[in-house]
Image (cartoon, rainbow, N blue to C red; front, side, top):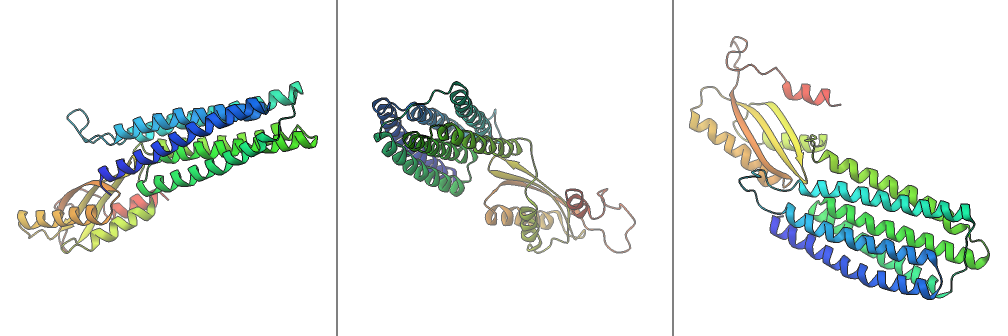
Length: 315
């Protein structure tokens, strides 16, 4: 998928969710005041925070799609995981805010009985926000965007918040108002767990974490399909936002001309970038293969079986 298509999908997804959130926020706040439901009003404010975060994601997503320039020769993709980390903090603060309000309600014993209309508003919110979560997370996986995935979980947190509001409203009308804050505490724990997961994933994308063992095995398989590659001497990968950089050393027949050896390296380069779309760029260095009978380190100083040693050390 090219960057233009990726940007179009991301922008369209975010604009759809911003518009739907704006309408939903207005409905929940108005009905919260009409039905005298503090939980519904706070749920509407929560939806308002989703609008703000989605606008932030939209800005950051566009920045990450900017092409490389003189100041940023490797591109701007890392804006996306940086933004994801910011969103994880916002999500964490949202969860803590819900939990604090729940504890405050329990300690102050300040319960109220909301109107029947708030039940329908909560049901509407749950349905719409769950749809927005599934829609956004599907698009996030499609374009491999951590920022969009983090925004999807904002929608899920709002859905969970609405479930808590619904439980509280029904419980209050049945004579058990404490159900509202208790449900909110459970929702808080879920939101905090998700925020930590998003933060860890985003951090891995900015600290040059290696690709997964499955991806490395796939890369090795593609390299070995190229004629002329006698050995893989070194293979290093690093995650760059939603893409991967590969630094590679291969061995070829030492009797080949420079042009022939370079052609093999070009074939490896093409094979990887054309068949594994996650790879943004790979650098291929060619070593002469040590033939039987050659003295140790005749051509180069790399360790024997370096790739296997790297893999074993990472287990």
